[in-house]
Image (cartoon, rainbow, N blue to C red; front, side, top):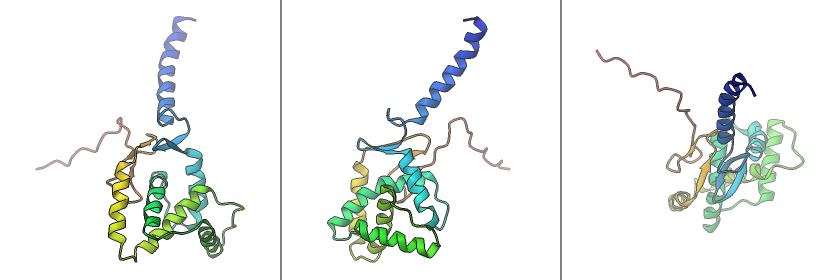
Length: 185
């Protein structure tokens, strides 16, 4: 290997290594997040987003969908303890109805992530009218604070104190500088 080849390979190796480290999450390649040791893969995130996109009023970024996927199991568990739940069959019927209204072809099978997020939406709608909504919200917040969550830097950082549905704050790479403060004068 010539000295010129070594000079070219050294920076390329450093860049490739940094990219590989940023691509994974907690040593789990392809993970968008790891929640209490369970991975939410980038594929699951992508499938869920694609399956639900025709029904959403706005373009939902991957960080918002990922936050919802992280929060849904906790939210659904606490809601079920308080007697509020939606079955998988009810959720599939709900998605089929939305598909018909949006004139979108119904998939053969909805991805598991899409079912869970749709259940989250159904149950949160029911809870919004429940007299126990505040108590349930507090219980959810307590359980969310106990989760061990690691989010791939590609999607942002986990902050359970942010508003529900946006607990994954978008990443701002360190190399991006904040805009200068306006001159006072």
